[in-house]
Length: 265
Ligand code: DGL
Image 1: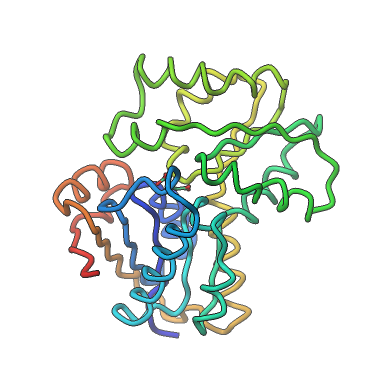
Image 2: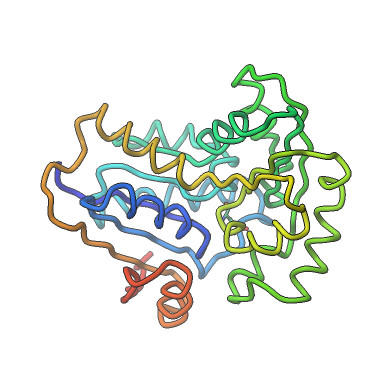
């Protein structure tokens, strides 16, 4: 079926999910909105974030003709998607359940960690999603305020990031986990630093690939998958500075992001 897959995040983080989707579903058209004009979401009240999600999803459907919505943001997912799902008639796919699925299938010891924004961790969304799997694991979680800001500035390595990571991840290191879920879509861009701090025995799990699989499954169940075999068109919009978005976004995502348009909210 024609129509792009619409996706959104507070900024650059959802590009980690966009990367996995472009690789797995190369024929699908995609529209991505980075709400950089209003980031970060993680420190905002969840009802405010919920309002942003509803507005962004509505715009993806009304202004861009999206046939499905991917909420490429853990904080927006944690804020609750019930209202959004009830108000649109296209499939809505989130990142929390796919991430949890990967996490519980990765651990061997049953001691797992999740890191995310303050909003995500405080919401308890991961505790509930893990309980829903029925897999008996012991979960340690930590909020990592400051990580998103580093990514949005394009600073993904270096001493400052490492010092902050050592401090914030200390409780997770102490908990002796063998798998750590990056429960914020910005965090895979910091994987080198996080991986160094956690050490070689901890597997870092990102929700990106599993979310792309979930999107493929949902589209095909709903008969919405693209049947033509011509490379998809990828559009990127930002509510912030579009030149900054294009420049840093293409560095983080790759050549597909060669142009950015303003998101007209
Ligand atoms: N990338 C987002 C997430 O997955 C939001 C980060 C933020 O804006 O604080 O939670």
